[in-house]
Image (cartoon, rainbow, N blue to C red; front, side, top):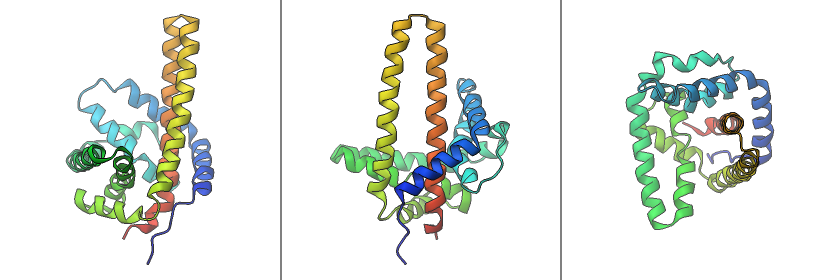
Length: 203
């Protein structure tokens, strides 16, 4: 059976719906993640929690911001780090050959983390499942994330220019922090919208 391909229009609509419906929870979780980013060990647990948040959002679960500090996420460190290492090795190889195919491969394996969480797979099983789930959709994923990255970059450069013109460091820091929160909020919602479509492809 052929895997279902990502529907870009549906993904965009779902991103907006998830972002608005769960706005307070996602934004609060992102802020807590950023504020504790400097705390060793805790920061790895919150990074894993934020990475796996799309799985819960795709199921339309009620999210509590403080849940990113749960010990269950720190217990996943081994599988998470091994999956990340395998992904980075493939990305490095793909990028060394040709940049774009390396990026496409990285996006194709992005759901591996979500497979770990929802299907309790090993890192290798999760990567294989992610590859199968995104078959036929890799370039659509690239188009979505490229558009997102382009918009974020342009907006970030514009904000940076405005902040430099203002010249008040405290105001600039607050504005740039708010921008990072905004980017992570939308990125998390986009990932949830994509997983909502791709999870049915995982066997």
